[in-house]
Amino acid sequence: MNGYWGKILVADLTKGVLSEEPLNEKYARDFLGSTGLAARYLFDMVNAKTDPLGPDNPLILMPGLFNGTSGPSVSRWGGATVSPYTGHYGDANAGAWFGAEFKNAGYDGIILKGQSPKPVYIFIRDGVAEIKDAAHLWGKDTYKTQEAIKSEYDDSRVQVACIGPASENLVPFGNIMSEWGHCLGRAGLGCVMGSKKVKAIAVRGKLKIPMQDPEKFREAAKKAMDEVKEGFLSLIMHETGTAGWVDSAISYGDGPTRYYTAPTMPEATDLSGVTQLEKYQTGNTACYGCPIRCRKVLQIKEGKYLYDKVEGPEYETVMAWGPMQGLVLDMSTSVYFNELCNSYGYDSISSGASVGYAYYLYELGVITEKDTGGLKLNWGNIDAAIELAHLIGKNEGFGKILAGGTRRMAQKYGRPIGEAVQCKGLEFPMHEPRAYHSMALVYATAPRGADHNKSDAYQVDGGTGHFDLGLNAGDRWDNDKAAMVEKSQNFRALTDSLGICHFCMLPFVSMVDMVNAATGWNTDVDQLLKTGERVFQLQRALSCKLGISARDDVMPELALRPIPDGGQEGHVPDMEKMLPEYYGIREWNKVTGKPSKSRLESLGMAEIAASIGAQ
Image 1: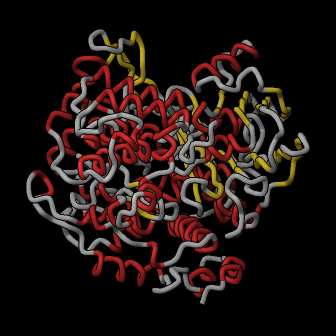
Image 2 (image 1 turned 60 degrees about the vertical axis):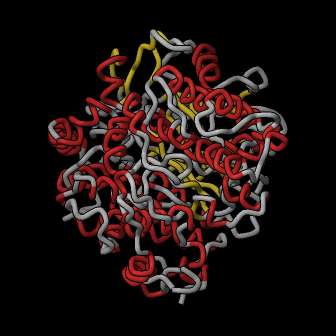
């Protein structure tokens, strides 16, 4: 099967046995790879009764279709499971080099089943896999784990996806980590891996991926690479990285501050990508095959925490562990928060938001030092935030409550559920729906919960359109966003499954040429976009199968209170207008939230429609 190896590695961890099964070719054709293909396999294996931390919940990890090829920015790989954090569908996708090495090691994916009685890791080299003892690795942070495994094989090119102490301690939003802070984050995939006692998956691959027409692929990939190198977004991201958005967030009111109750702090500009570039940056790093090189290498010579060489914090972490708690940080401390999240191996967005909610409740007098273990959670208390970051990673004391997330906190302390700024149990990322109304629709309808990576909406309305999609910047406070959000969600479901980075504005003609040269399918733009819709609708159907309905597609009340000062200028999204329009476009049932039977059948998913009882 060109473009694929035609086999999946299956680990029965309860028995300690590895086996191979043939790749389902129809699934591969319909869902491509990464999170799309993983979701299709997951659909067959779980139901609403599946215990996220039980042996019956599989963890499915898969490279994107283009991983390991000469295409530009084709590093993204992903996974899917039943989330221990939200209780329903969870997926994640990451960059770096693991996906490419995994694909070149000879497999189209790995399915982890059951639970090991002792810590193990899995090593894969050129189509041969084995289960190894990991007792000596258990307890190590994510950086030391990777160093130890690379040292065991005396090969720095071994790529490692591992968990840290947070997931060993079953922190529900634990991540799977690789390299310097690259993570399969948000949905608790690391926690599931920890419940299975799998410390890491290490891969080394030198195999040549079979292709229909290798020469045509190289030609298409080279043309695409040249396009990406000259792209406007590529140039911006190379210079300032994701943290370059900080200054825009201040201007537009896009950065949540004091738990969604205040205008974005102007002091955050001291942590922006521009500041990193001007004062601290010593170089860039790149994911596999990426000419953009958006990751920043910093040297911190002043402040409490000094680093000779460290990767700079991304936008999400800068905002979540800073303005969210009203913290005014220097770069040294911001980097330290980033390193704590990465070394423990947990999600910086949900953790930072949960800490922010705790500060908010403390200021209201709902919780006191008796609840927090003696910590005074006044806005801006940096030392308290640092202590909470450690407690979360250890899943101890008040940190255990924070690790459960804002929805559980609201329930515990008898607060209105709409005070917890989340959707379907997943906290909002650091893009404000009051700054970009389209993001309210994105958060409400994304399959795993509030998720800015399922759409380019904030980028589109922030000035970075996608001309091939016909998406151009519009009024960020306009409420006619349903069509734009639907189209951009389908597109991102497609690129995620192919393994293409969101910052790579790949022309459609190049994408089509690469798919056809790799697989021999003779597809076209319309068929690829239909594939994107198929992936998104499948993920929605899977969410519904696991208990989500239309009543869960709501915005929390706190995030809809107007903030008249700052960049939001008092605007709030009109969900009563946008959500019904979106449901109409998607053909989702107004009560069950399920995609219609006819829509699923038109996408070739009659079996999915029957399974969820679509009408």
